[in-house]
Length: 400
Image: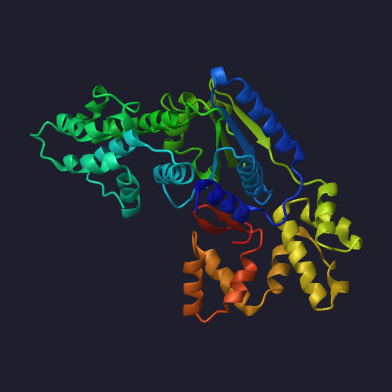
């Protein structure tokens, strides 16, 4: 399957099931994108922080924005950070995502990272080693990195990469290879720079900018890694042209993270208005008699709207619709929804809550071990509180 077709399939998988509205936010983004595109002679990085409370629809907005890029044939990746990983581990996964989705290569970063691991005694895990060795010239260089200190490693590496000179000559010169002699700490501190250099070499000749969407970055805003990789002097936001960075958090990023050249544009993702909610309820076939009560109870927050819709149809199936709007309040929505689930669905939800992330194969295997109906899983995985990223499924905090 080609990259374009594969990306379109991913986009279809990410298409939100209950997404409506956000017309203003989309129009603003594409206005900025076109303005960015028209200034192609002086391209610069654009940084947009979309912020809002949990459940407000930031992930759905990110998925929809990514889908629009794919439908327009534009380059984009949609990458959610995983909270239980370190910032650096997430950046390694972002590098892999850019390679897998867009075919971008990171020769100088891969070499510097390998040197850092060798010097510091860290083990490169199988996944990252596979990504690094997917480059033929890195495969040729790798054995030389195990040479004894007495060997002129710089000369050995230069000799090893000569057959691939045309592939890497734009990444670094022989002078740049002096980091082979530096300490592990010195190499580590320069990793953001080499990542930025490689990213630039992938995109500088493109006639359109690349959009990088990073969801769930909130837990890392105060992390030293975030400041170094994005905000620092060698950081991606200061050094990287021709990229539109879209990050998703719960609050504005402080102005102290800004500088006069790279201003972060904080954009609020607010609650849905009643018109958008009514449109959604109409498409779902819900009686207009309940529109006002549903909007009031959900306060226009998408994840709660979805729970109400699921609860509504449970009452329809049980022929108890007359009881649906009794005590319809936001603070009771999750509990009422859970009471509508079967025993097997409750078991599935508990397994989901226990896992950091999963794919279908892992989940089905676990459910078979505990004797739970697989159909319960296929029903729940369609709900909006089960989020899908390019790396698998995860459960929204509202329900977990």
